[in-house]
Length: 305
Image (cartoon, rainbow, N blue to C red):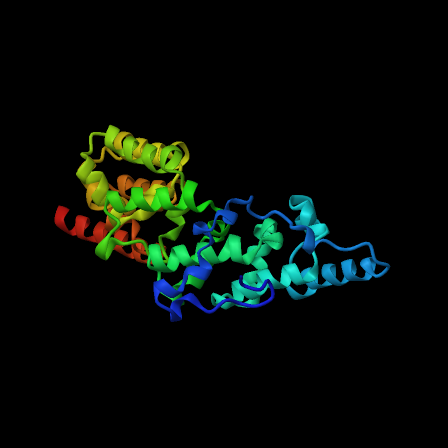
């Protein structure tokens, strides 16, 4: 049994066969509820309980920069958790490369982690990222900073099903999940990933076309259907009179703001009777776009003479 106050051997230094201590999923005891506060982590009824409580508040506020009021409100168990419990979580996250400021941001975003048992709740997640997703250890930090929600996601109900779906879709080999795309793992297959695939196919795109689009622009699977995809598709087809072929070529179109970039630039081109491929219209900075627009207008005037 790994001591609560002692960091287990870093998994990346050992072969998978020697990493069993960090894989409580194979232990029946792991089926206990996650983030539950065990009896031995609660304050005893001693006269110095108030001082210990104050010490914990100061540690959260001054050391970790965590809003303790928010933490106690969202995770009532954290009120009675000992300071050593909080420190064990900090040590666990730090062992994976997160600097103190990042640890504080993660704990402030997800206060339930303040009462996590690292052996049961956190190290299995890191084991999953290292050995199943095969994220290199130096990139674990980036994965967590980009998507701290992964630390409070269920392995069997959320992360593993999402990984299987994404790999079946084509996220393998050169397109494998990386620290930049681990955020996809926290998306529900039935409620988030699959509906977006189906929506894109409903436009008349083949399944192969859609797969190629999401592999080139994985962010497609993170955008809201109603607030992003539908609005941008409607503007592209109805106002820009675009061809779906352009979306297949440049799926990054959906990553640009409709109101701040797509509409203003398209309208500027239309105003002067000009047009550009989506990539040339959107990928450049505002200054470059303006310069290109002026150049195209001059060329148009010269051609008309």
